[in-house]
Length: 381
Image 1 (cartoon, rainbow, N blue to C red):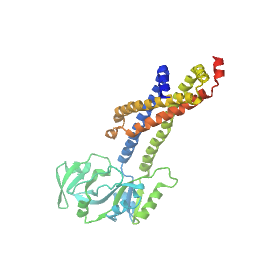
Image 2 (cartoon, one colour):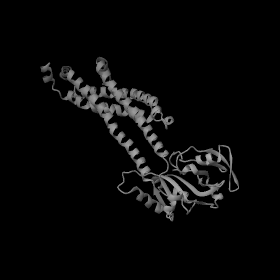
Image 3 (cartoon, one colour):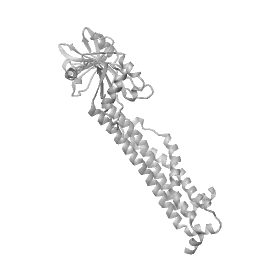
Image 4 (tube, rainbow, N blue to C red):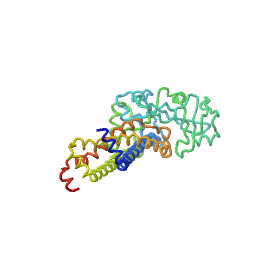
């Protein structure tokens, strides 16, 4: 059978070339598309993450009027609350990127500023997630833009706060928000300066809920938190959370729509060429049948031809599509450009899926060849 298929390919080079070209094109486009979609999903996640935290976990007794007015809660939680939350079963299915902080107003050179102590972000232990936010070493400060301008500070300067010297590690860029009058230090340093050792007044996080739920996401988050941390409450930035979820859903829907479309185009191409091949060879097929060649032989030849070309087309198409994705991807997805790489699993799928696709598309034309009556075919010719 293999010998028969190879002779068939060599005898009808033009038809074989057209079919191979179609399969290579589909495989290349699919590989390039799936590789860039993987990059797009990664880019979307990173960009959405960089929008910032969209959850605030506060002490339960926090007066929200006072909180929104001054930017922090007057009440505190034990510092171990963040570890208790992180270690709760399934917490990272609801919350992600937990960062504990302590915010207090303090006088620096006669002017009131908000001093923020931040702890390293806690992420899921079983996922390779880059922590959000930033961590600050003890004895260092990151000062807001307005503080830096007002006090004439620059990186490397020393700033005295309540009798303790701190090194200004950097002056932050102008954000145009209240953060321009924040001074960030390590959580331990700020706890010591404000006499609140072991206490925090806010945990920032990102929710992992999508908009597909019929229930209000904020209600789900509050119900989960009530079980894990009953002495706290959660406030959700709904606008940011919804924007993040809609962006994820848009990428997923586009992927779900275009993937079948690419497969359909390839199948139609192979099917049309196979039908034309069968029609052009009606008399030849009739002679073969009259000489005693069975339906299994003829069907096997057409299907085998499609499968063999599918294997070759899938292999060649993967390398073309991979090269295309690696060349154009970094220019499109600049945030995660370094993460775009060869997805070797797609090579396996390409050399499996392309022959299956080709065989499925060629099945009906092959059956047309098998069921032809040789007497009717030869009479027509």
